[in-house]
Length: 96
Picture (cartoon, helix red, strand yellow):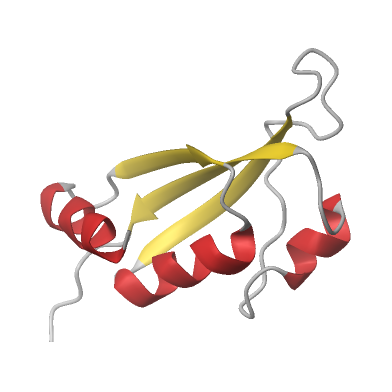
């Protein structure tokens, strides 16, 4: 996954968007986004059991903290039955 994120970072324009829909929990995935390159990441969730009556609004991302997924867990529970949607925006390269 780390190699994929590096390649995506290389080919995307500044402010380019990568959307990942997965079962991968935030405690692992968010670390990858932080470690690989500079990304602004927003997390959305969709309830797997019923897409019509979602518990969470898709238009409102789950608040993220810098330590992994503790704020995510407090917002959606310890073992939710959801699809995670990560919206990653490439941060512009800094000129040194």
